[in-house]
Length: 92
Image 1 (tube, rainbow, N blue to C red):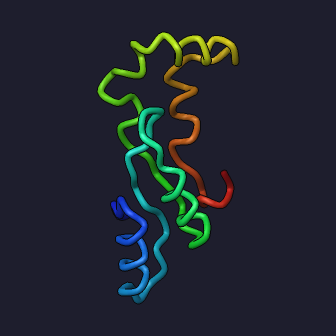
Image 2: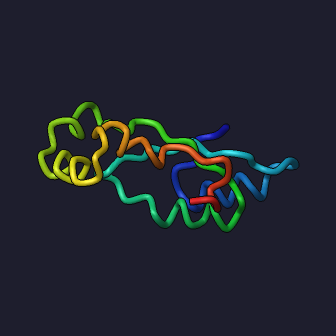
C-alpha cells in the first residue's frame, strides 16, 4: 500500500517499481474530487483504499449529506464509506 496522491506520483511509482502496485491509499471524502486520480488507478488496475472519509467530522454535520443519506435509507457514515476501498479500482 502506498500513498501516491497525484497522477504524476502514481505514474512515477509505477515506472520505478519492479513489482506491480496493488493498492493506493488516498484521501477520499465528499469534499474532495478524486475522480481523475481514481480513473488513472482504474486504468492501471490499482485498487484504492481511502482514508479521512469523515473529513474530521465535517461530513456528520453536513445537512445536505444527511438528507442524501436519508433518501437512500442509509446511515451517513455508511454512505460516505461505501466507496472507501475496492478489491480493484476498476470494480467501481
